[in-house]
Length: 336
Image (cartoon, rainbow, N blue to C red):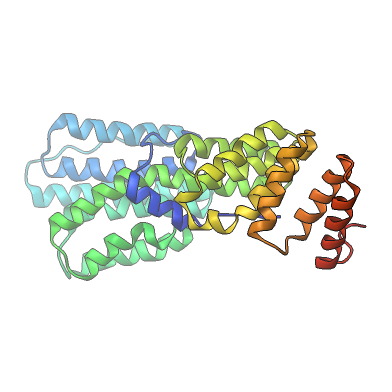
């Protein structure tokens, strides 16, 4: 059975509690965001005469992300101290000299999603130099974000707060604060999206080792996400790693209060953990879990079937027959 939690729920958790800022380096989408974000922020700071150490730190982060993606970033151009001219110079550097070529490389090597993520990160921070409430340039940037987030396969909720500020013509300080917020949580959140999607994709392709590895990466970024433990447990079950699967299903149950989706899917969690217990001949624990699954979902044919087979192993013919008959009534053919 397929089981996938709603990623918008994860985003709510991200807003509420924050994530580990050091997302796993295996996430190329995270690197694409960090490249675009750090490149544009360093450019904006440079154009406005900010502290050189701060500019160097952000530009160094951009170069590091670019290097990890196989992209060499040219040095920032020298500025004159005339802010109007310097902003124009940096905009040419960001958009013409580097933005378009980098986007093309990402498109060619990694695909449209990576290029779109880079473009959103790059152009959203242009607001640090160009924001004006209601101005055409501001609205153009908002339209880029709105259009590219679909290509990037990012949830609307990730950029909606920024777009809503732009729409109501908020002050520069409000927009700046939201850009800083986005800069802080986006890399880890994007990594989570990538690892979760990879885990689902590998599972569908029956690459269970690969699936477990991707969900392990997700857990490394957000150890409070029950959906990642479930994804890994499901892969472990297919790999016959029943002890590991039980540990992960137990974690899902422990974290059930963090997601309404978890509560709705608890019958499946108890069913699968009960199945694992049964395969390890821990029959009483299996019966308890399967009974919980049935209590939560009285028409759960598979839970009746598995519990009936375990009762049979335990030598309790009456309870076994009752469960197997109930399973058959609920889903004809299931016990064949």
